[in-house]
Structures are given as C-alpha cells and as structure tokens.
Amino acid sequence: MYEHAQPDLRAFHRESIAYALHTWRAAEETLGHPFLGADRPAYERAVATLLAELRRFGSVPELIGYYTAGRLALRSAVAAACAEPDGDPGLLEAVVEGAAFWRRLRELVAAAVT
Image (tube, rainbow, N blue to C red; front, side, top):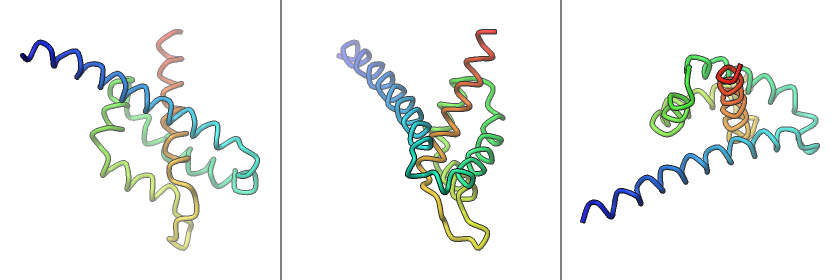
C-alpha cells in the first residue's frame, strides 16, 4: 500500500518546488513592470535588504527549505524590508519576497556552474 503513495509524494514535492520557482520568477518580472516604476527604488532597497539575509543560505535546498519551513521568520523579514520609515507597509510583499528569492537562486546557480 505504501509503495503506491511514495511516487505521489515525490511528485507533489517536485510540483511544490516548481511552483515556488515560478512564483519567484514572476515576482522578478513584476518588479520590472512599468506600473511599479515610481516605486522601483524602494522595491530595489527592500529586495536588497531581504537578499542580504538570504545570502546565509549556501545551497538551493537550504534556500527552498527556508522558503517552505521558515515561513514565520520569513514573514517577519519581508515585512521589515517592506516597511516604510514610519512603520506602515508600503510595498507589495509578495513581489519583494519573490524577487529576493529569485535573485539568490540565480546567485547560487551561477556559483555552481562556474
């Protein structure tokens, strides 16, 4: 009975990772959209802040693990990166989060292939 469940769990895991990667890439693309043009410097600062924190992860599995298992800490880090000086959130957190993860993923992949 359990032999039949195992492949389904692996497929779900692959699909979850694929969905995360798609989400991250879409966030990076959204960041480049003209409707965010006026706020782009603020977005870039927030992404850079979160990216600096993500650099503590030295592998793709660690990065994905944090994204999936470290949600509470991640939410706090994203909210802090997106908050305006007066403490009010002013940026789309999903865009900041996804773009930072996408950029860290690209750094890790570039380091692995050089």
